[in-house]
Length: 367
Length: 266
Image (cartoon, rainbow over all chains, first blue to last red):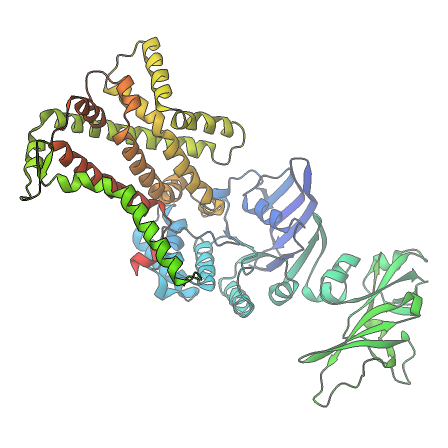
C-alpha cells in the first residue's frame, strides 16, 4: 500500500454537544500507512475527532469515508479500526492473553488460532512472558503495550491512539515513542495519534494536524509546520518562536519586508501565495526561530537590530539568551539559542549586542 | 505511635476495654451458656454438654421455622439480585427519573418496618392476594432491594466507561459486552449484595409478622417462644445464628471490599 492513497476522509464534519459546538466543518484526509498526529491544546477538539472516527460518538453533520464509502453510520463494532485508550481500558478480570485475544474471541475464531495470534502479538510488543498476568500486576508501560497488542491483533485498517503516553514518566515516554514508531513501521498500519505534546508529535509523526478551538489550523510534515507555519497560532504553539508584529511592505522577488518596532525586517515568502497576495500595510508578524537569531558581524546588512541581554540560561547542549530588543517603550522580548561551549558563552548578561537573522530563515504570518 | 502521655494512653485503653466488654459480652452469654444445663434459673457450670443442641435438633417447630426462613431468604435473594441489578443497569448513566426511582427504592428500607408492613398488608388485601410465603418473599424483596440496587450501582459507577467502549471497539456485540465485560465486573458486587440481602431477610421480623400466613420464619417463631417462656435450646439456636451471621458478614466484606486480583494469583 502506498502512502499516496487516502484511507479515510472526513468531509465537513461538525460536532456539537447540545448547543456547544466542538468541531467546525473539519476536512481531513488520512493516507494509507502514515503516522498522523493530531496535535492541539486541551479543548481543541482533537479527542473528539478520534472518537468520531472510532464510532464512539455520532457526527452532528458531515461524512466520514473509508475507501470512498460513507461509514458515518456504521456501528462502532463493525468499523475496522481499533483504539488504544488513554486509560488503556484493559479488562481487569482477564489475563493479558485474555485481553489481547478478546477481539478475536468475540469473532468466534478457533481457540488454537486465537492462541497462536495472541502469542505473536505479545511477542511483537515484547510481553511474551506476561501472558498469564492480570493487568493489575503490570507496570504502566507494560499495560500500554498490552493495550497496543489488543488493538493491533484484529489487523485494523487504522489504529487510533488517544494520548496513550500521557500517564507515563518522561524516560518511559521516550522509549514508548520509539517503540510505537518501530511497531508502526513493522506492521505498516495507519496510526492516528492524538496528543497535546508537540515534542511527541515532532518525534513520531509523518504528518501533523494542528487543531485549535474546533478548527484544523494546519496540516503538514513536522518540517513544514516548524518552518512554514501558516498562522500566528501554529507559529506560537509549535516549538519556540520569536514573533514581532508589524505591517507588510511591497513584495520584492520572493521576499517581503515588514515594518516593525525593530525596523524593517525582510522575510522569505517562497511557496506561500497567500503572503504574496496580502495587501500592503496588512498586519502581520515576522517569525524567526531562536536558533536563526545570531550576533551580527560587519558584513551583515539585512534584519539587523540591537538588543540587550536580559538573561542567559544554560540548557545543556544549547544556551538560551533572553534579549530585550528595540526602543525602550516598545521593547520586544526575543530568544536566541546557540550551541553551548565548554569555555563559556560569548555573551554576557546586561551586554548590548547587534543581532540579525537571514531573510531566508525568517518567515511571515498574517495576524 | 501515640503522641499522648503514657498514663492517659492506659486510661483510654481501660475505657475502651470496658465499653467493648459491656457492649459485646451479652452476645457471648448465649454461646457460652448453650454448652451448659440451666435448671431453676441457675446455670450448672460443672458439666459442659451438647444436650441443648440435641434438644434443638428435636424441636420440629424451630426446624420448620428455620426451613421457612431459608426458603424465604433464597427466594428473596434471587428476586432482589435480579431486579436490583436490572434497575441499576437501567438507571446507570441516565439522569432523568433516577432520583425519583432511588427515593422509591429506598423508602421501604428507611421507613419504620411496621409502616412498610402495614402498607404491604393493605395492598395484598386490596388485590386479593392470600397471605402466604409468597407475600413474605415479596415483602422481603421490597425491603432489601435498596441494598442490592445501591451495591451494584456503586460498582457500575466505579467501573471505567472506557471498558465498555473498548469492548465495542474490539468488535463485541452489546450482548457479548454484557456477558463478558459488564457482568463479570459486577459479579462480586452482586454476591456481596446477595449476602447482605440474605442477612437482612434472615432476621426481618416486623414486616414478616404482618404479611405472613400460617408459616413462621425463625425470628417470628423465636419471638412467639419468648412470650411463652425460655427453653434452653434457644441458647443453642442463638449461638448457631450468631456464628452463621458472623460468617455471612465476613463473606460479604470479602466480596465488597475492592481487592487486587493480582495478589491472589501470584
